[in-house]
Each structure stands twice: as structure tokens, then as C-alpha cells.
Image 1 (cartoon, one colour):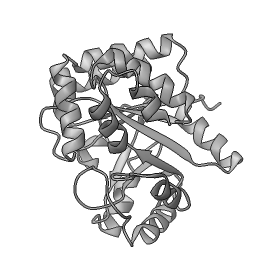
Image 2 (cartoon, one colour):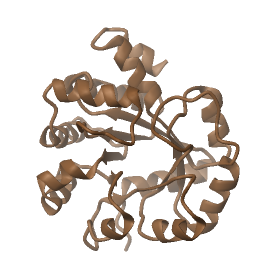
Image 3 (cartoon, helix red, strand yellow):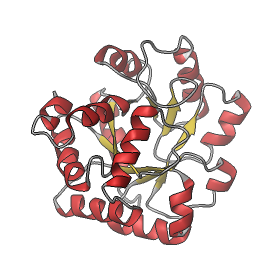
Length: 256
């Protein structure tokens, strides 16, 4: 008998409903953990199907300036990996039922201890894990067989087709396709090869494909949704947090 899982069940339901997933990314603790705890249910109420919580890190090489500053604000507010796990546990206690995915660099995980981290994330109520800078060959061993955590992997536009097959074979949950070369951040237009790349990915794995990095407006989100199984919106949200901070206008601005 298959054990129910939030990520798997979500995509199965969305497929039946002929709907695409909206994945919302936040830097946990930006501008503070109390605000993140308010933003998560607000985003879910506004239509987010999955929440990605970025663990703040002092050297986020894959992130553009918007998310880098979000990490800086979170670190300055005292956010740590253990506190992010406490936040997830709090959200579950408050009946948050959507999938929660941890988005992190390897350094915080290494410092915490890999096995300890996996156990703590599971106990807190996380559903998935995306470690940006851990090679697939290494990452394939980071979750033991039977782990309830789904291992999300990144595929970039520059990843050779032969390499794509190897990378996706180590994944579970869904594939995160990076919509462009470079770092995160809002962009004026989508890559002209997006259709071709997503089509190849769909032929390479049965897992759902979510596209992110630079989706900055509803028009771009609609274009991505026509091709992929989900759209990841991150920098546009973090940018609004930067502008509004703890202001009462923050949640209305983000969920509008």
C-alpha cells in the first residue's frame, strides 16, 4: 500500500483538475520569522500550492541580489536552521496542510549534520528538500530508502541531455527547471528555448516539472504554466518583502 505524501498527492490531484501548481518561495525569517509565519498561510489562502522555504545562508551563490538581501535580512533577524525547522513545526501545528519544501545550500546542512538534519526536517513536517550545490551523485545518498522527504533536483538550461537523464534519475517529488542561465532574479522575458527544454525533460522523467528563476509577472507565469506542471515565483515575492518589511501593507501587496 502506498503511503500518502503531500507532494505526490498534490500533483496527482492537480493533474485530474487540469491545473498547474503555484510554488511560492520565501526566505525563512525575512524580515523575521514571525512575519514568515504570517505570510505562509496568507500565500496559501491566495492560491499557493507549495511553499518553498529558503534557509538563509551568508554566501548564496545561486541567488541574485534580491534573494541575497533577503538572506541577509533573515540572518540579521537571528534566523538559523533550527529555528526554520521550529517554524515548520509551528505551521503544521497551525494546520498548514500544503507541501513545505526546504531550499538550502549544503553548508548549513553539513554544519547541522546530514542524518540529523534529515530526521529533524521529517519530524518538523517538511515534505521535500532541495540542496542547490550538492552534486546528484552525492545527493543520491543523502536520504535513506523509505525517507518521507522528497528530493527535488535542479536542472539548468546548460545541462547536457545525457546529464539530464542522470540527474533526474536521482530525484523524487518534482524537478525544478531553472528557466535561464545565471542567478535568481526577475527578468524581462523568458528563454526562447524553454519550450524545447521542458519538452525534453518530460520525455526524460515521469516526475512533474516546475519552472522557476526569474518569473516576474502574471504574463510570464501563464507562459510557463502552458508548458510545465508548475510555476515557481520567488524573487518577485522577496522584492515586495524588501519594499514593505513589517508594514501592514506587506500581506495585501504579496497576495494581490
